[in-house]
Length: 143
Image 1 (cartoon, rainbow, N blue to C red):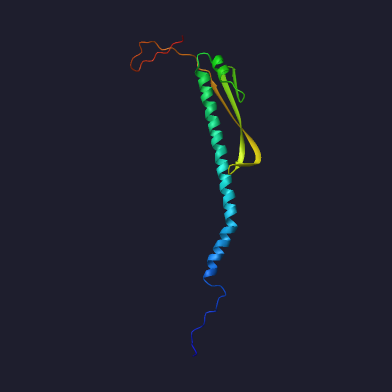
Image 2 (cartoon, one colour):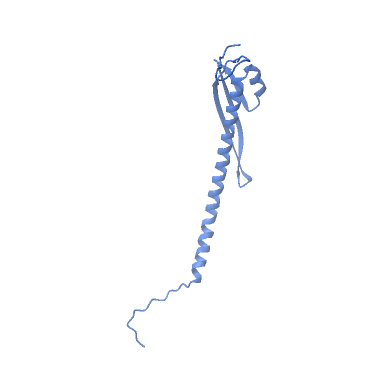
C-alpha cells in the first residue's frame, strides 16, 4: 500500500500532444522558410543574368578588338542595349539589360532591375603570319 519511492508527478500532456506541437511549429516556420528559399532563388537568377551579361560584354569587346576593321565590327554589333566606343586605341563595350523580379514565377512584385556590364580592351593591331611558318617560329610582322 505505501511505497518509499517518490512518485512522479503526473503530466497533463500525453505522448500524442508532442506530434501536435511539432505540426504547429512546422506551420509557423514553413512560410518563413519558403520566403527565404524564394529570395535565394531570385538572387541566384539575377546573379546568373549579371554573369551572362559580363560574358557577353567580354566576348563583344574581344571580337571588336581583334577584328581587322574594328569600326565595321563595332557598327555590326551595336544594338539598343549595347554601346560600343572606340577611342585612344581602346574599345569599350557597355551592355545594359532590364530584368524583372518575380516571386516564384509570379510577377506581382512589379519591379525591374537594370543590370549593366562594362568592359574595355586595347585594340590589337592586325598581325600577319607568313604562309611558311613551321615549328615554334612565329615571326610576326605588320601587314
